[in-house]
Length: 210
Image (cartoon, rainbow, N blue to C red; front, side, top):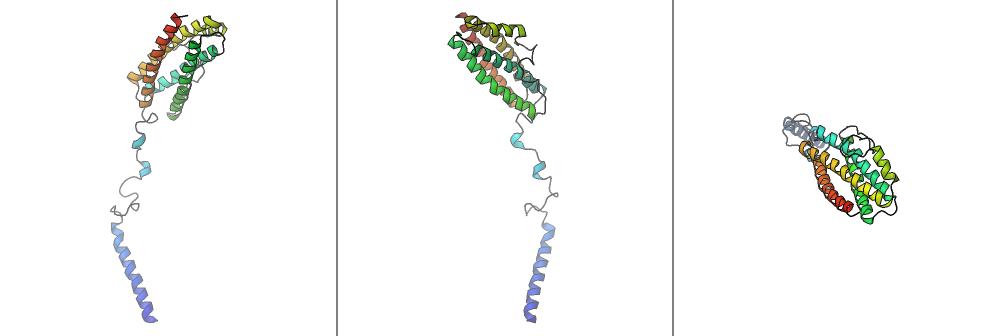
């Protein structure tokens, strides 16, 4: 029994010596996860390269202004489209255009609002009246005329007002393209220019035919 106990004790001592002998090298990087605080900051403190180019980490004042101004601008376009869609005897091509404008711009309002929230920047609000004074915005008196008009007269007012409204949006979008930093915001601005310049041509053609 004594011999057996001695053998076990010696084996335990040898294992302890081997373990202690390895300790000085534990910070050498040969044992991943064992050198925290010795070979650099923890991974959680390093920048995330996967999001370096996203709108919430790479933006400037031009991006903020673009989103902040375009939200109420879009909101008014949606409101004008809602108005024309409630009316009777409006040419189907005009109502189809209104549906298209609303379908495109409502989701863009949500996208730009999310950007501002991600950037910790306040919005001007999504009210269609929040951006009066911006390029292309329709005044209260003109908007009231649209609400009161019917049929072909309403269609003409909608088209003429929306042409000017789109032209203002294109101007703002081109400013963002030239001055913005956020890749997402600049891309949206390019999409707005392409879509709304085409819609301006479509609306001019519709207006000429009324």
